[in-house]
Length: 111
Image (cartoon, rainbow, N blue to C red):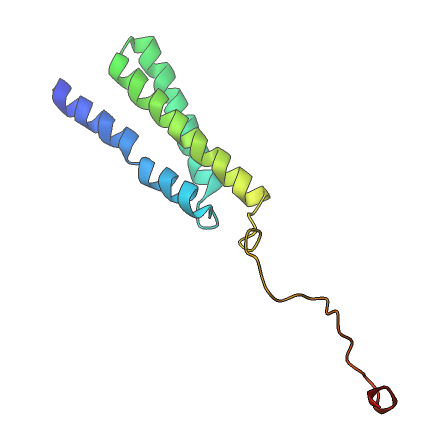
């Protein structure tokens, strides 16, 4: 029985790592529901407290570690939602919006 609970706990912790990694790599959070992760975080904290009250180390560790990962996802969601990275910030363009040459705009100036 303990092996099943341990495996379940490991899977619960590990299942969020791909999402966290994707956010870190892509810096995109548009398709992530903040509400879902906030509710998940609250549930994990409540399960952690329940584990403390029951003195069940497996429940405590599973939910506290999961809550930390969930909090990281929430933090990155808020950060990238509020401060969207500019994908062009590091690109060096050879095109300039300001030209050093002026083009004559009237026929009189073209002469």
